[in-house]
Amino acid sequence: MIATTDFELPTTAPGVLAPDALRDARVRERMSRPAVRMFMKLADSWKLAVDQRRALLGDISRPTYHNWNSGKIGTLSRDQLERVSLVLGIHKGLKLLFADEASAKRWFTSPNRDLPFGGRSPLDRALQGGIDDLYAVRRYIDAWRGMK
Picture 1 (cartoon, rainbow, N blue to C red):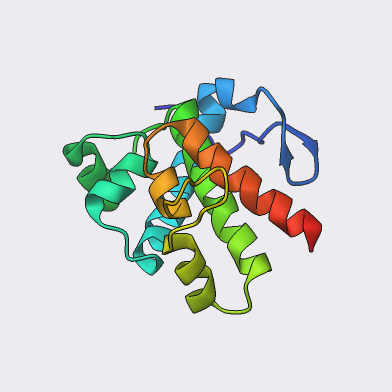
Picture 2 (picture 1 turned 120 degrees about the vertical axis):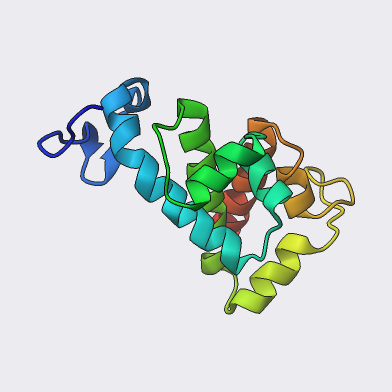
């Protein structure tokens, strides 16, 4: 295991991770535990089922999910960290767009006829499993925020 106590995350500005930082195993190791903890808290607040959580995380196996949920977290891959980041970004965007959690959740789980969703809910689009599906939801929310 790599010691991370003296290791600083590479940034381009305060709070902005360097573009290629996730290629470094030390960076991923340092970020993995807090990322999984935040994801699990958010998934609990959204009341997501285990299979939904696994899909958002890139279809990880049930044993891996249960290990992570119990605190046995190894170093996440770049893909897994990007997925967690996208989910957290979706949540942040919803908090900025909606006055209360109930309204945000209703929008996120309701059918939507806009182009990226094709009659499905934004959550259903995110659950398709591809990282591009998460990006599509995140981009939509970010664009919507830009219009307000």
